[in-house]
Length: 233
Image (tube, rainbow, N blue to C red; front, side, top):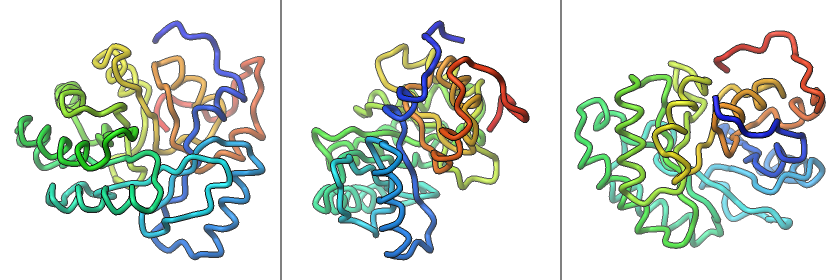
């Protein structure tokens, strides 16, 4: 693990993308979610592109592209990105093409991601790798392809893949690979303050969380462990 100082509740809020990505989200649920984000004090919310534009209420808006499979033509991902930018998105989280990763066609992976990068100049771009479905070698190579394409972050998971979400091992490996040149977003199954602190120590610099209120309610800056904390979330 890295030797960063222990994560506080306020730092968690500062680095959290408060997330609502259920495909059946209604306008009423979205309004409640935005109101909750304001109450919680998070700086960013992450929502589906079809829900944009939304009332930012002082928060930055993160949205997803090629979600949740990543198996979209590059031109479609780029068009979706341009529409999201026009609709007020501040940050883009794009899902890598897992078929290209499996084929180890790293030039194609980079080209796919570069199409999205070029569609959102000046915005923060995060690349979702679905690390639970990848080997260590694939994680490393995918991180390097994302960096070559101009991404700002690599991200563990969509939270929808059957293989699972974030793990300490994946975050450590990602952080070692990008060496501080890119951020590392841990996402997928993070439901406790202990999990957030462990992932932070492992090298995460951003969190994608839907259980934000639950995490904060159980926060203990003294670092006492919670029941059920594990190395995979």
